[in-house]
Image (cartoon, rainbow, N blue to C red; front, side):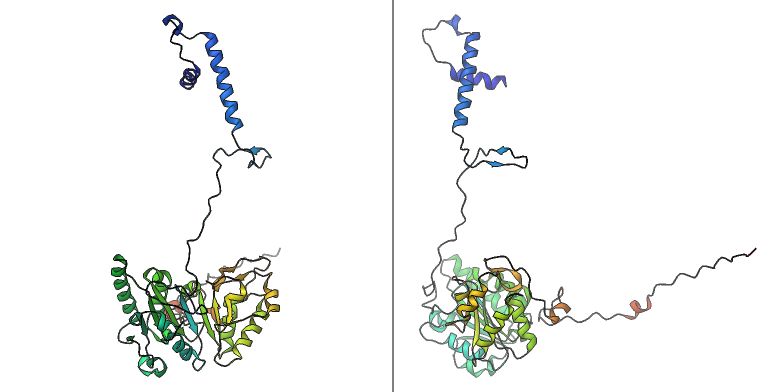
Length: 385
């Protein structure tokens, strides 16, 4: 404390070259002058403190923050608008999923999945077949040799068993890592067709969901049922193409994934209306801005909801798959739809294929291990006198 005071005293003294050596010793008046200077300095510091942002604590007293500054803003980096050319890609129609993307195309057979995929991969303006470098489009399908629709695309790289999808992804990553080191990495379009029948497909999809975009890999995966999709993949997927399910239980899965309790009727009516058009599909893209009108589409080109239905959704908070927020609106409704019955059976246990896990069967050793009942204690006789 004394050292701090001496420093302030020296600071407040004025150098006088005419002063004698005898006067160099400090006098009592000098200390009084320094104390006054110290008080003045403290008062000046208080005057420069901004008290406009003072807040009160629990006791009602004002709290003072001495290190106040402007708010630190988190601003996203500039992104390329839809249709702008990326490295290794040309023009992509603005209504199609824009890179980076991972699209899940779901629907049973004979609903139009292959024909839609064929049009997306065609070598025509705005389609992926024209936008991506032709040699950078890779198709993996366990039935590629029997699918005449996709075979007519004449893609350069088409794979199937015995090569595994995991081997293809590992090879792509190794190649992309080499190109990335020389700043020559171009975008890759990987199409995984009929992933339900691909061994360890969901492990591969989970890997692509978390790391694919870092390697410039954009994925279109085709499956038959929403109920078969691995939960980790479901929560990371931002683009969905939903074709009409044949089973009522699958409709429930779709509604459970995207709708809310208070919005179920609106979603069910809009989904049914879109599916009533033959070979049509529902396109959901959570990467798009512009609210419900742009996120939910009937096909690629038309809005899914009518203006009246959009008005009914304005006061409800919408969610992405598995409860993540999609549109940050009012929080009045936080009740999810009840889970489908099939989901309750396998809630905390999922196989790689998405099928419900086998029930645990009690072994003989477990059955035979029965708790021994404690022997009955002899009852006390009551003697009557």
